[in-house]
Each structure stands twice: as structure tokens, then as C-alpha cells.
Length: 372
View 1 (tube, rainbow, N blue to C red):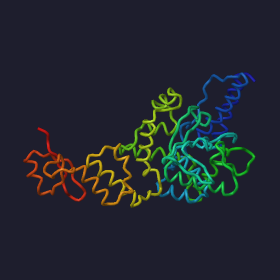
View 2 (view 1 turned 30 degrees about the horizontal axis):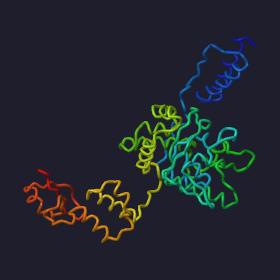
View 3 (view 1 turned 180 degrees about the vertical axis):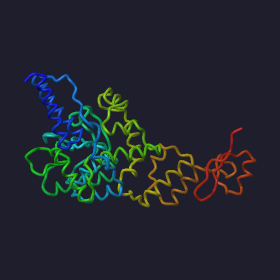
């Protein structure tokens, strides 16, 4: 066939798909595949073929991003395997192809979680949120990047991996994070990942596509960004989009400076409340420890000095003595550079040249003598 005959044949193909009620985006994808096959065989169609409604997406008109409560229903509707897959997409922003590629020959591996340790059939995370590395072969843009997994996500992944080990599987660094149901392929295929997530969504009573979970990650971080909790560049980097941080990342041979990585981790930690479907419980011990650390800062200790003190193991009396010595020292109360007074004494001491420093949780005031 000549170019004119092929062009007319493609026009007829487009018309047939339009009469069949196919969406413009569907027709464009089908036509793109045909043109690609022709180009592979040395035949190029230069004339443009117009497709009606090519940017219209009728199947997505009524689709919206789930709320946190709805995402919770989706998590609980699946088994441990589906729950782990859902949370990796919803809380880390991973594409489905990252969990397992089209042919099932590669996918996310245990080694891609560098802060996850497996010992004696137990999974532990050295840091939470934990890092998830996406290798170039699993990235749509073919560049390496990393993202993080939330505290809730780490728990779901831990439950799934420990269940596999309990059933006799031996996990190595190259083991797939999400394994196929039938071991005909080493990794689960993208289409099977989509089916598994879709089934969980359907059982929860929703008609959304699997990729709505990735949209959830993006949307919730936009909300966190509006509250000043995370930078736009960080959000784009975690989504696998190319940008300024990606350029620095590749320039530095796939390694950002440690302070940048920790700042990104802290930004993700601050944003967790917009991603997680359960609120993390803060134990009484953690509250006491954090309160004591803040009190030591107010008393004049540096962060380095505080790190050397095991504040959680100190008795109340020992802790009070440490704070008292730093605030007033071992000298006479009127000779110290800092002291603790009642609120009704503040005007008297300010008039004598003392300076206000801070207010303690018990309502008392810390003041300091100014050097003249």
C-alpha cells in the first residue's frame, strides 16, 4: 500500500472507533501504536489525523481523590498483600510499574529499602519514615530517585513480609517486595498489581481506578504544602518528576547531601498526618521525654549537651537537680546570672536590670542578669 492508501485506511480506522463510542484518548493511543509499528517497518505517515475529543476523559469526569477515611476502608478491604501494595502507592507516590514491571521480570526489591533490616524472621526499620529507592529501570522517566514510607505504611509492609516468612519463604536482598500469586514470573506484573488494588477499591464500595491512590499522595501533599509543611520541590521529587532536586541528585551520582536527605525526611514526617489514615499514638513516656528536653533547652543546655543526657532514665529528683544547677548554680541565689522567680516579682527584677528569658510550665519566670 502507498502512503495515501495507508492514510485513508487509518482514517477509516479512526472513524470506526468513533462510531463504536471509544473515547478520543483511547483512539489516540491505538493510533499511536499503529503508527509506531509502521515506523518500525520503515513507513512513516506524515499527514496529521484529527481525532475528536482527544483530550476528553469521560471515564474520569466523576472521579475524585479519596478522603483519609475512605482510604482506610480501602486498606481494610484487602489482604496483607493488597494492603502493602495500596499503601506503597498512596503513601509513597509510587507508580504501579515500580512495584512490578509489565513483563514481571523486575520490580521493587528488599534491597530498595536500605533502612529495613530482616533478622530471625522479623522485619525492623532503622528509621521511620523509611527511605524507598526507585532504580532507573523502575522509573518512568528513567532516572533514579527516592521517596519515603510512612509509619502506618511500614507497619503494613512489616506485617506482609513477616507473614511470608512465617509461611516458609526465605527473604533475601533480591526478593520482591510484592510477590506474584503464581511463581511463573519472579515479580508481579503491572496489570496484576492494578487488578489487586482495583479489587480492594471495589470491595470498599468505590469505582475508582488504582491510580487514584497516587493522586491521593499528590493531593494530600499539596494540602501539606499549603500549610508550610513541605516544599513543592520535595513533593515533585518524591513523585518521580524531573526538576531542580533531581538534577542535583543525578549530578551527585545518585546521592544528595545527608543534611538534605534528613530535611526531606523531616518534611515528610511533618506531612504524615495528611497521608495516614490512623493517628499515631504518642506514649506518655515520649511526652515526658520531649517535655524534659524542651525544659533543658530553656535552662540553657545546648542540643549536644542534651544528647549526652539519658533524660528518660532520670528520676524526677535527679532531673530537677540538673535543671536547678544550670539555672541558679551552686552560688547564692542573688549572685547567680540566672534565676527563677514568681510572676509577681517580674517588675521588681526588671527594674534592677534583669532580663526576661522564658516562662516555665509551672508559671514561674526565668530571668538573667545583664552584664554592664
